[in-house]
Amino acid sequence: MNSAFRPDFSGINLPGRRYAARVERREPKMSKKVTVPEIMASKGQRRVSELTAYDYPTALWADKSGVDMLLVGDSLAMVVLGMEDTLSVGMTEMLHHTLAVSRGAKRALVIGDMPFMSYQASVEQALINAGRFMKEARASAVKLEGGARVVPQVRAMVEAGIPVQGHLGLTPQSAAQFGGFKVQEKTAEAAKVLIDDAQALADAGCFSIVLEAVPSSIAEMITEAGPVPTIGIGAGASCDGQVLVIHDVLGLFDRFVPRFVKRYAKLDEIIIEALAKYKEEAEQGIFPGPEHGFMIGEKEVEKLGKS
Ligand code: KIV
Image (cartoon, rainbow, N blue to C red; front, top):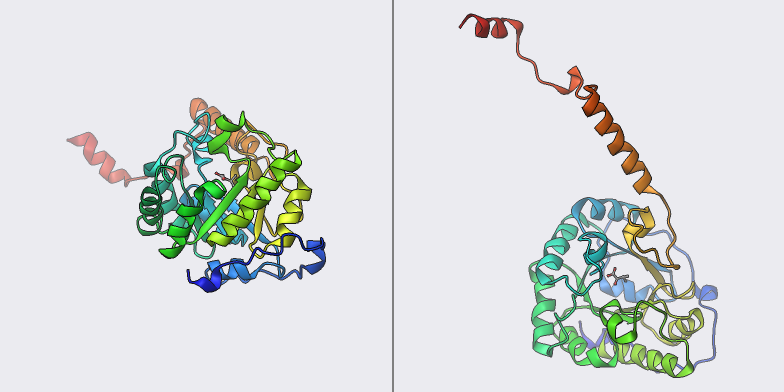
């Protein structure tokens, strides 16, 4: 990424303008691959969409839906691997799933989520692991959590040509430090830190910033003041784009459904009904029917009887 991509975040104190008034809605161009410069240029032009995906079939479906970005989130740990939180998922699992998503995403920009302790220890460690997402898993960008404290890592990645999506607000990898999964920026002091972090990430070269569980008014301030697209999840409608976990959107995971989730389907009910029907038919001998089997000619069967 060259310096032309470096966002100018100096206008943080500009008087508030409603983002919606500046947005000209356009139909997504479905044919060619979405690029990082396109996501950056979308600011103020159209809202962008991002969904998580963790495997080849979901990547195919999400890609056909026309969403701009597919995030192979470390939420993989919880919604796919059944873990309690996101801390224990590692580079091996993340690369494995990111590669599967990359194979299915013909159009959407694929972003690999850097797992806990894959970038915190040192800039060198962060750079090597970010590079693995690009080389081994064919991602087009990486995402990492944190503000000012990850700026050296972001700078090194951007200088190496690795586009980075930032992630602020409720950052699940730091949940232990923050005392759980809850909205953080409820005081002016905390909001100020968030605003400064957003500016620091933008200055370091992030091409977009996820804002998770951030009060809508604060998300609006950051969105209006900065040239970097903000991608909200529980951060209100003023953000430049939205992201959700695909299992939440489809109604596939109900162990923990945050308030900011909107379910667009209840596929878990459809799946359980289909599987129960299969079980019943298998146990009653209704399935398989003749049409599901393979036949050989009667004469051949007779020959068997004679031998
Ligand atoms: O891992 C994830 O799914 C995420 C999104 C919630 C942004 O980080």
